[in-house]
Image 1 (cartoon, rainbow, N blue to C red):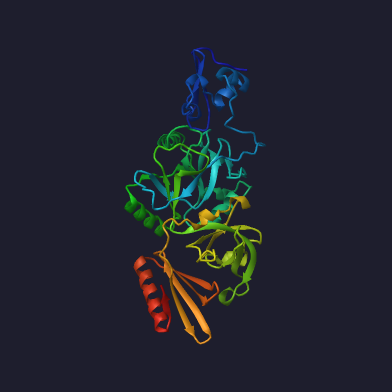
Image 2 (image 1 turned 30 degrees about the vertical axis):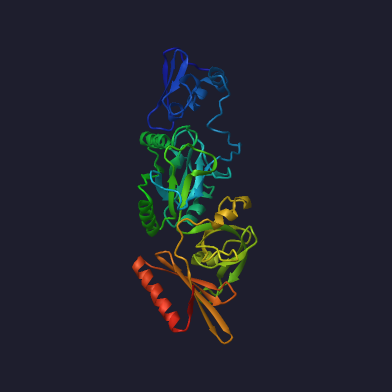
Length: 422
């Protein structure tokens, strides 16, 4: 097995354009790769992939005095990443001083130094050219295409043929989990790695200091108008933790959840002959229909019965049914155990305006009509009193137009005899 004498150095080619330098200084072995430089251990206790390859695992374990876990697991090893998961922001938490970033609607991915893993430990078969330039240390991020392109993203990352369509995807990195340092240092490490190695298909996520609640609301308005899901807040100076943590918060105008498809409702009108709505069931047994948010392609080839879908909604009805549910996409790699808890369902972030309800009683006919707006979308639900009714959604380019539409519809309903229920 080759070795380095005291004072000797050796260049080795890694994933960066420039070679790394291995060196022995009085028995202390070092490497210029990020995997060695950014460890929190003393110099004499550090090792890396390149030193193990040169000297062998046995020598390195003996030198450092402990068994060193490889940063490159064997291909047959199934690893479930211990990822940091967000809690939901509520208005009682002052966001001042927190780091603020856009919430991406992509697929969560963990780069273990060799390959991409899903939250459940399944491998994403990214082509070698897509991974070129990524460091030999774990990174936490999102495989992302663009806003409102979640389903296309899922269809690409689930492929196993190393297709060229991966060129549409970017690995957006927001953390380096193995570094036992504050968030700012971990973020600096990621940016430093990318400046040196220049991966073509990866970048770090932009972060901005939040100046307060007004700044947060203005930024949320801006990104939602762009089509983003919302914002993420990261506590300054926080360490990386596995599982749900109050150091990472998601801020959204709409809530979202998952449900299992239990049936297909046939469409009417222009949707005759294809899907009208998905019949779904929540883990608590509540059943309802999701009929908005589906594309023509999804109506012609709907998610199969038994699949898990993500949907957005505004609030829960008194019966625990999500109001104004809208289809987002089919969940990838999500077992039943990962579905929301009742606490997640009832916690609102920055909710849309509460729905205004109007009722009409005319002889034997008893009807209701509800309307609400989140700024750019107007949601209407109507039907017979005692039923869930049906929902319609109309989108607008600006808030003024949406507000005028709401007032116009309310005037039309009150003119027909509908009375508002306060």
